[in-house]
Amino acid sequence: MSTFSETIRTLAVEEVVEDRRVRAALGVVAFAVATALSAQVAVWLPWTAVPVTLQPLFVILAGALLGPRLGALSMGAYVVAGAMGAPVFASGGAGLPWLVGPTGGYLLAAPVAAFVAGVIAGREGDLRLLAGLVLGVATMYVGGVAQLAGLTGQGLEAVVAAGVVPFLVGDATKIGLAFFVVRSARWARSKRS
Image 1 (tube, rainbow, N blue to C red):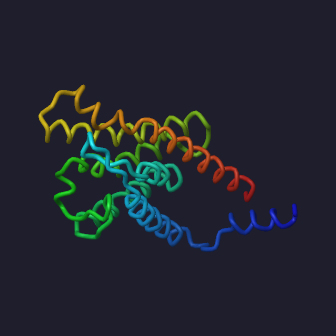
Image 2: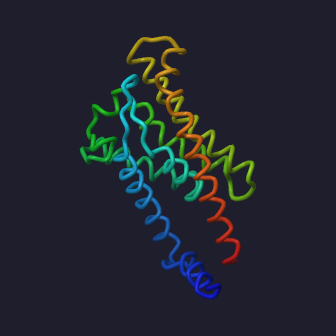
């Protein structure tokens, strides 16, 4: 059994594509697609115009795993694809109206959030990783709250109550999951070296 699990682990972390540029391009596309798929897992809450989705998980993972530039590029590709009409936003939404609507601030902040997560998480250190993931999600909150405030004309307290508070527990769970995924990937990379 130990030999089997070791073989599976070795195959899982083996670099199938050797060219660094091709791996980078595949990573960018994979995270853009994963983010699009995660947006389809949407729960609409009656007291806010912003749905609960799995998107923040993939935004911060893109930054932490691909690095700041490629993570931001991946999320930029996701946002541009949706703006151009691909049904990649929550519940199959698409088009420019999504970027100027209640969820637009979160979407437009996604590339910046991936960049922030990647820069702060760096390549080593659990505390840096955790800080990067938390600040990546916080960056999405800032974008979302800013746009919600502009659209609704409500005060900061009301906008935070509708655009941040309902998502805190779920996003904390996503941050925890992302932490363990990135930590495992780093462990696997160090064993390979």
